[in-house]
Image (cartoon, rainbow, N blue to C red; front, side):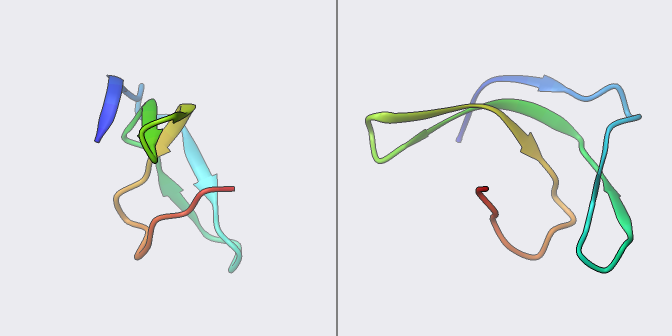
Length: 53
C-alpha cells in the first residue's frame, strides 16, 4: 500500500479529537485510484479507521 515507506523516529505523534495523542510509526507515499499520489502520508496503526485530510 505504501511506496517509499520510512520508519518514524518514534517521537512523531498526532493529536486526536478527544485531546489524546497517538504515535506515528512511519511515513510514505500512497497511490489512490491509480492516478492520484499522496506524499508524506502518515502510518498511524492505532486509529480505528483510515483518514485522509
